[in-house]
Image (tube, rainbow, N blue to C red; front, side):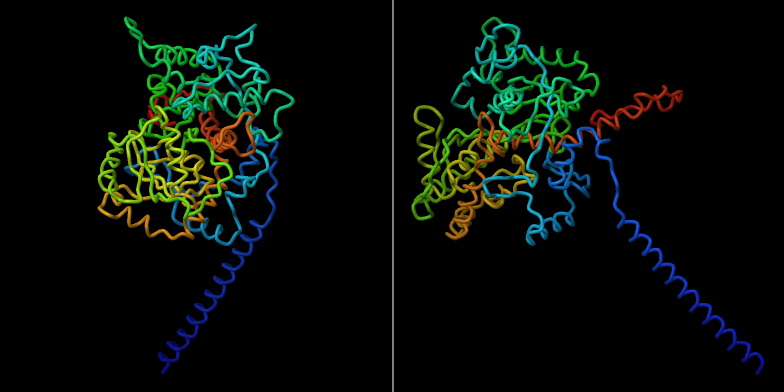
Length: 509
């Protein structure tokens, strides 16, 4: 009997102990959450004056977040440096649907929640042979720059124009120095490089390639190659390059073949490119570099009163059909579509009245094909936008300008190449798009077209300012790399032989 009483009393004691333990654990858990919530609700006082160029940094809060990204391997090369996690993407979509966050306002007025982004730029005073001298402009006096208030050198037309962003950006920097410059400007030139967010290299590399890439008889090197060699020598001698290793420099190489000789030495800089088609990912990638639009060759469709029924051609393509690499799909699509009654798919070039025919054809078409050529991108996309012809993009590796703030799926249709070349797949898909859906995308094209227009002087959120804003969004990452790189610049030299012998990976930056 005593044993039973003892056992029962032990059970009571153990139950009380467990109950006490449970209650205490619950109380501690609740208290810990109380303190956590209280601490996170406190305002964090940050002196933004301690941040370099804090005005620039404060204006970047509205740009799309790059949080929670993970390194991945992918066949997309330059694209696959960083990829958004699914959770972040889903959350962004939910916010957009609820109207709580709008990264792009397609109201014809604003593409950013911020009223102004000011980017401070230091531009090298390179000799004219690198920039306006390539346009046969000759300086007068000591200045290496034309007075853009009274004398703007002419830029050659034709295909040269599509890669002319170097011309427009340089003009915009020069114009920012004058008191009468537009208040809507995005960039300001500074004379002290230590005050700058970015160091601009004014080499008209695309024009140099287009005009001077062929060697003259009995001459070993072309003028284009010589200029690239001179540029490398010049930059390597500058204190600004030595200080940062080029990581805060901006170099224009919009033509896929421009800078082919110099890029292997200048790759730490940020490149402005049309795509990554001829660049290995350790030289150029979406994390480091900026994709800029081509300048469209077809004139803008002003006062477009067309509609779904007044555009008789369903699908339009005119250009080179037989290409290499990713462009092999062009010839396969040609054979699949050439006999469709409401499809225009033919060879065409800029020669003779090619631009006139393309203008008429695109404006009379509901959808315009943009198929990869020798490289993933082409000017055809931007001609289609200017013509309000809904682009159908068949280019798996294409990169698009300012895609971090613009949702192209609102006014473009994307089709995987593997699907597009299946018999009847593409034509059936396009025929299945309803009039209402096409009209919605057509209206959206008219709202966003100004993002792809180049002007001088630049206008609010035109292509020039959009490119500068894309550059500004790269600046915080540049700062991070530079600050990390300079951690030990003022520290005493290490006496640890083991640390000194650790090699830095080639693609560390």
